[in-house]
Length: 159
Image 1 (cartoon, rainbow, N blue to C red):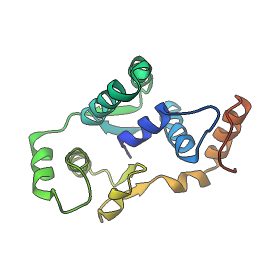
Image 2 (tube, rainbow, N blue to C red):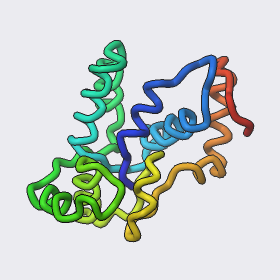
Image 3 (cartoon, one colour):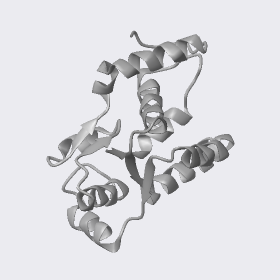
Image 4 (cartoon, rainbow, N blue to C red):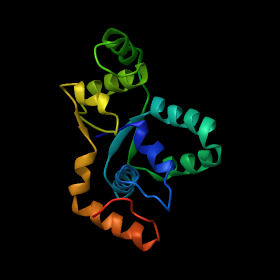
């Protein structure tokens, strides 16, 4: 399973007083990885998030770096020139930006068929299944939500 930048960014925007379903799903995915689920992302995703944080949430930069170190089951892969060539050849074919297309090239190279993302642009890629909303049906998500509620997060969704 490939983890897109949207998962990290949504989690970094978590608001204890308005804990949205998208935020909760993102946190749940990261918790699954923390508890042993192996997932992949790229150094490009990592850098995208760092750039985003440097513009909009500078106070979270070190939290993000510490989180990456803690997620030992998250494999960070470097894109190759071939992945970038794939992106250039497919630019405009899907409603995805160049970074997402490079990540798609990495996914194809590693034979990863699922991407965890709130970005619906991935829905147009036939060889990849975007996973996100359906995670709310997993038993573990309900348990995660209950833990968040017990930590005084105000859930903006029903479980």
